[in-house]
Image (tube, rainbow, N blue to C red):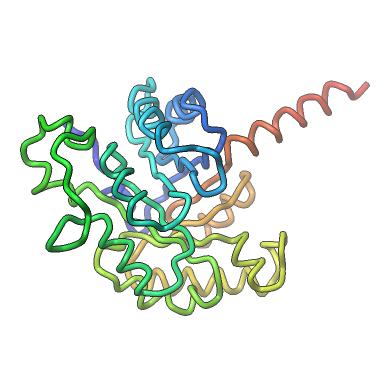
Length: 257
C-alpha cells in the first residue's frame, strides 16, 4: 500500500512540520527523515545542492528508518523550465518555485510540470520518475502525485495572491518572510509590525482562496506562533541553523563554571 502524497496530506487546517535542508548532505536528509518531520525542503536556491545530488536526497529520505510520510520538496535555484523538467524526470514530485510575483508567473511554472496538451514538459521514455520505463501508466497518472507550491516574497506578490491561488495546478502558497521584510524596508527584521501585518494579510488571502499556507519560522517559539496563526506547514528549523544553534548552546553551557 502506497503512502499518501504531500498533496493529499497538505490540506487546509493540517499541521505539517518541516525542516529546511541546505547542507547538501544525503546523510542529514536521512536523519531528518527519521525524525518524524512531515516534509523536508531540499534547497537549491540558497544552497550549493546541484542536480546530480537530488536523487541521492530522495533515496536517503525514502530509505530512512521510521521515515513514513517524510516528503521531499525541492526548491530549484530559479523558476526555470529546463531545471523543472530535469527535477521531475529524476523523481521529484513536490516543487517550491521561488519569487512568484503574478498569476502569469504561476501559470508558467505549472505548465513546466505538465506534459502536452496541459503543459510544455518534454517527454523522455526511460527516467527515474517512471522507474526506468517499468511504470507503464506514468504518463496517465504522474500529475496526481505532484504538489506545486509557489513562494510569494514581496508586497506585490501578496496583493496578487487571489489571482495566483486561482491558477490551476497551484496546490499551496508559501510566504518567504525574509525577502518580504527586505522588500518592505526591514532587511533582517521579519518581526517588524508592518511585516507581520502583511504576513497576516497574506495568510487570510491564501485561506480565502481555499489553499494551505506555509512559512519559514525557525525555532519552537516562531514555529508555534505561525501554527497558532493558522499556517498549515511551517519550516521549524534549517539543518545548518539547528546545528549552529545547538553547537553554540552546548559549548556555552559547558563553559559555565
